[in-house]
Structure formats: structure tokens, C-alpha cells
View 1 (cartoon, rainbow, N blue to C red):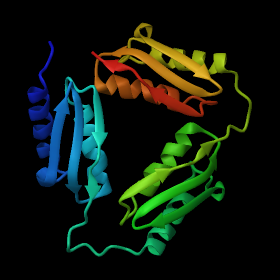
View 2: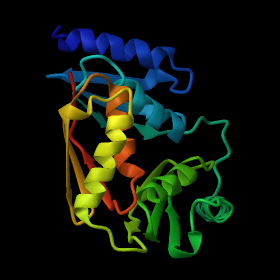
View 3: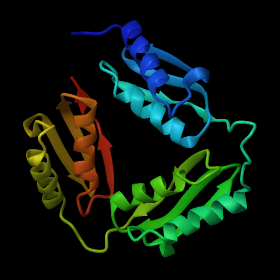
View 4: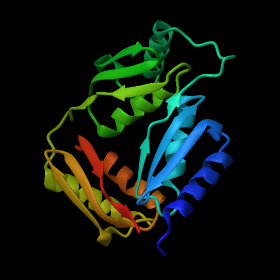
Length: 220
């Protein structure tokens, strides 16, 4: 069943309003051809991320552009950039998943920038998750490069991803095409739900040798 933009907009607004993380009073939602644009302000970076997830999880949504900005409540004591930078470095250093020696952190006006290298694609996003959860962060610019410690063949990477999709109960692997070129993965085809789209993405992210993932699967 094809859903109208107005129906999608109503559901996105309702979903945002019901998500206690978002505080959606200052969020504006626009929908055009199933593509959602979020503008306005939210009180935390977590709220910004949650709003993006809520929009994507709404039936009929084909894309989400998240233009929300973080505006902390007036009662919130905002840490200095130096303090935020130190906290991010501490989090990275204290996490066994990320080898933080090769990661450089800088912060300007609450925007954290990550540069350097990691040896697996999932570690790139793990580092971003850790940084985004630090008090005072309003956005994260993730410029980490993925440099695998071993050489992987594209054909083998694609086969590993396809096998993972076959094992996943939420994804019909026959409807997803996997292409790998120099470690960069492109997923195309169709999936039944937003959750399945996420599962397909994770199958690629968590595969050794992957240096990038472009998830172009469509929810139908």
C-alpha cells in the first residue's frame, strides 16, 4: 500500500512525540516523495540521533535528511572544548575495542573531529559512538580511515557478507545484491523493513576487510 506524504509526516511526528529521548517540541518535519527532512533544535546529540532513527523506522520513508541542531537547555553547564576533548580521549583509551593511539581528537564549538586510522570498519563507528556520548558534544565529524592489517580479496569479502545475510532471519538474501570494490561495499536491492535494512548494513560493517559501506537497499 502506497502511503501519502501527509500520512508519513503524521506518523513521523507522532513517533518523535512519543520518544522521550527527542523532546520534539522544536522539531519540524517535512516530507516530499517519501523523503523526510528534519529541521529545528533538540537538547542533546543523543536526541538528534534518536530523531533520525525514528524517522527511518516509519513505514513509507525512503530517505531522511537530518538538519537538526543541538541547543542545550539554559540550565545545562556546557563543558569547554578542551574538557570535551579530554573526555573523548579518555573514553577511547578506556575502550578495549578501539586502539586509540592512532586516533586524533579535536573539538571546536562542541563539534568533535576524529582523524587517524583504525583496522576495521566497525571500529570507525564504535569510535564515533563513544565520542557522541560525551557530555557537551553537539556533532561528530568522523574522518577516520580504515586500514586493514591484512590483505583481503573483494570476492571473499562479498561472499562473507552474502553468507551473513543468508543466516539473518530478517533479510531475504536473494533480494540483496552485494558488490565490493577495493574493500568498499555497495548494497542494493530490497528489504521488508527498516530494521532489515539495518541488519543488512551491520552484516557488511562487521565483515573483516571492509573499508566502507554504501547501503542503497530500499524498504518495500
